[in-house]
Image (spheres, rainbow, N blue to C red):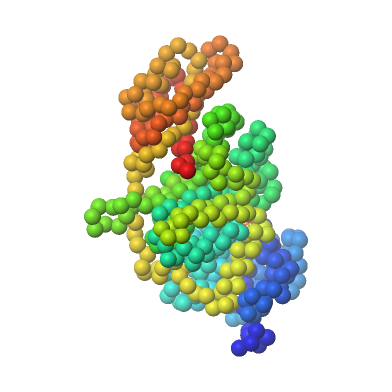
Length: 441
Ligand code: NDP
Ligand code: HSE
């Protein structure tokens, strides 16, 4: 059939916030080239959100308004549902399930929903033969889902890691540039539309963990296992840590890392998934990623190291990824969302992070009094931690609080955790210790 006579792909759009309005804007602005690339027109038929009367800065007059998203998905004149509401469960999940059960394709930017329910949604899609796509759910505008699903599909992937949360990266790089205050910078990230509806998801590392679980499932052909992601956020990081890292030749970035290690004979490899603030050597490509930019490194056995980098949040980049998925569906792509058919995804047991070796930064805030350093040295000695360097900073007033920063030699993570546990409850500590791995180059 020629492009002119192909029927349009008829879209129901749920959610008209930052991303939803961006999709409407993009479809209008680039309508002609999108039609040429999709081979048919992408036509929004109906839209839904909570507040019908809100001015969203886009023209919605040509679309039917539906208060009930599920009813909208059930309309006979709808082929594809785009879910841009958010939330792992509730209305978004109801909508996704009902769309896929009805055999309608689903495009979503909702990493929380995919991280929690991606497997069952992929099963529902396979059952009804519908497409399920979520490029925008990971790293905004960067085509990393497609890159891993298609570009590296001939490779064994050894490791996937990167900067997966624009809000945290924005905060950390602003604090680094100008010594800006954490709360003030978070408010800026919210105003710019980068943060989640609940910004706790960003700063506690949960949003990055959602994305990491999705990438790991695709890269390793594994059943998605969000519950197994070890996750820490950035709220304990102080300006003093950033200054200390700088003096040592590092920057601080929130990094998600997924890799595998051999299991027992005859068993599947084990999968380790971690999101943690890390010290990144200044010469590492990820050290130069600032603002809301995201970057993902994937290491394949034949392709080597790939770096995907670009805008990780915001209306335009995220809409770009949503519409790219729609174009793929318009072209007839119903390939498996997690790189292999859902019934072939393997169950990978979680690996123990304590077994991993590396160098670690450990910051302790302690009372400035005799014997405190000896106490720290005793804990590290008893836990088997070898110290590469130690810096003590500040003595604002006699007997006040001082900051002690340690960098360890390469050693098992378990030993560092043991040292921290030995110091736990000590009245020499004035705040909980901060432990950050140093990213291997
Ligand atoms: P917003 O909060 O800006 O928009 C959410 C939209 O969903 C609003 O239009 C809202 O309606 C509507 N909505 C919320 N709850 C309901 C409900 N119960 N019933 C009907 N409509 C509802 O979110 P974003 O656009 O920022 O994010 C949308 C999705 O995209 C989320 O899953 C998010 O994680 C993801 N995402 C966001 C990125 C970003 O940069 N913002 C980047 C990548 C992914 P109303 O406007 O009437 O209140
Ligand atoms: N809140 C997310 C972030 C949006 O800051 O990265 C993009 O997924």
